[in-house]
Length: 354
Ligand SMILES: NC(=O)c1ccc[n+]([C@@H]2O[C@H](COP(=O)([O-])OP(=O)(O)OC[C@H]3O[C@@H](n4cnc5c(N)ncnc54)[C@H](OP(=O)(O)O)[C@@H]3O)[C@@H](O)[C@H]2O)c1
Image 1 (cartoon, rainbow, N blue to C red):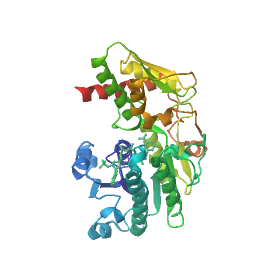
Image 2: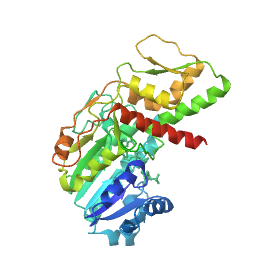
Image 3: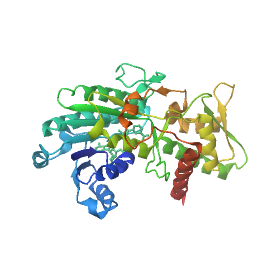
Image 4: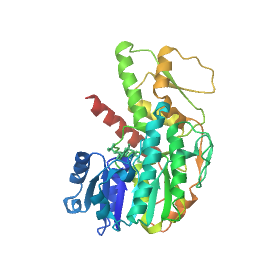
């Protein structure tokens, strides 16, 4: 199996590449912006596997990802499957152009590239949050004119439609993880975004205010009945690794948590892990008035807070069918696992501080 992978230098890609290498027959072709970073990744893998990683420099915002004519010729007819993970994972409203350039145009370019290389299977990593402002996630395409919280979600919905428009040219399947967090066994997470960006913002706020005003408390507002749909990175990578053998064309797979932790509990765990005693959480139902500093705290983490609001549910019937008969169990994340993952994430934050 010859696999072409985008986003290998990212949080999920770094995990997926290790899984894909377990098939000793496979050769992995990675498209990267930064060759030095890719070489560091390759050097971190077992020596016996390093020869099966082939690095190609490119950028998905360019047609054919900016690959040279020689690279294109060399790759033509060689690739069995493409995993397209590369994306800009940011929720800021003012990054619309950058998000569409990377996520929408980037996907278009990788689809065109796959077609011209004669690829037969295409796996697109989207997000469970293509659900936008709906409250129930289904394993089907959502309308492109739905309501979204940010251009990230919109760019991903539109990209999914693009991917499905190639269904007569190759087998396409879409995978939609929820909020990806650290490894379920070690807590390890190579990420600064999503939940990790949130924890970092809290830690920075704590440090700054501690120096100025040690004793006062700060309130964080969260939805009373909200849950956070966390999924460990190894679970996501394990499911993606099944794709070449078991994914069915035209299917969408939710990689979500059937029993997500409640926000109030999660925030308590984060607060304890950060040793932020002066943080309190108030629900959005009780009447509250925030002072200037609290408004600042809440606005710092505003982009992430949409993912702490409401209690979404996701149907993951296709994924349950996909993992049936494999060694992968349907996700059950215990409270201890969540505490361990959050603790490890906050430990990383402390390292950054040192
Ligand atoms: N993290 C989550 O919670 C989450 C949840 C649901 C879905 N997802 C999806 O999962 C996928 C992977 O996410 P992640 O968390 O691993 O993201 P990440 O850590 O930010 O990694 C993004 C990857 O995309 C690459 N990339 C970005 N722009 C590129 C460009 N113009 N050309 C080539 N490569 C480019 C990055 O390369 P550099 O190393 O050069 O920056 C990096 O390898 C994304 O599609 C994301 O939407 C993530």
